[in-house]
Image (tube, rainbow, N blue to C red):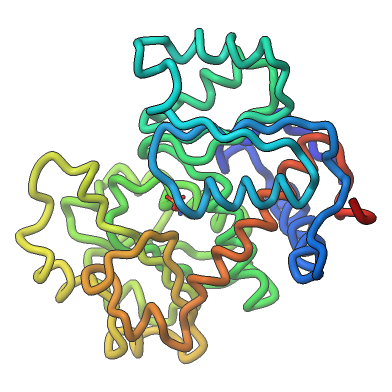
Length: 313
Ligand code: CP
């Protein structure tokens, strides 16, 4: 299937067929991940700039590993070490990078829309690695991959997204992606973190965790994003944990074969109890593993490198 996308900016741009094509390509990449020599020449001679204006462990590292396994030249640039700190605008930064002719620029930024602005000026393919509270499409895709791997399908599953919906770009990307693929999505959190306008996305909404979890195949817990909160959204972390944190007892409300996911980083003891994070239902580390494959797939597909990594470097 032809991949007709110049950039990866939002889950909204993808059809269900696009999503499954990316996941199929990512599945092909898993085999490379398990080889002793994990390198193929698919993107040899291509340059990818990882430009992160916000902290990241999983996303930045997985783009770098994926690019290196495909033999791309990977360059890491952080907002704090760039001339942005001297007052250079994002547009001037994009035009400067454009002069060096990169093939892909991966952007994480605290402002929604920053990757879109970069895409208009940088002259390369842009992948949104998370912009403010807006979107995190590669996280959405790796979450879909993880669920499809476990259940063999996405259509017809009940997916409960629980926690700090208001501040979560993951919630927005997951909500759109899972709905496009035919899942029934429930959003659950305290009223201060679950704004009514989310109803326009067509999700089921509840403030009651038991209702959200009952019959759920997939539970996606979200981090309480203290760094994006400038006022109190709930009385105490302890109270949040009692009402919305997932422990082994509350997990029994879901299906016996339910899986628990979290984009990370986790606040252990707040939104997730360690017994669940490290328990048999948890796919949290599988999500991280799949992140490498999804990001490799997207880079290959954007650069027309086929649907599977070929040959040895
Ligand atoms: N899920 C996620 O975006 O994690 P990082 O912030 O570590 O990249």
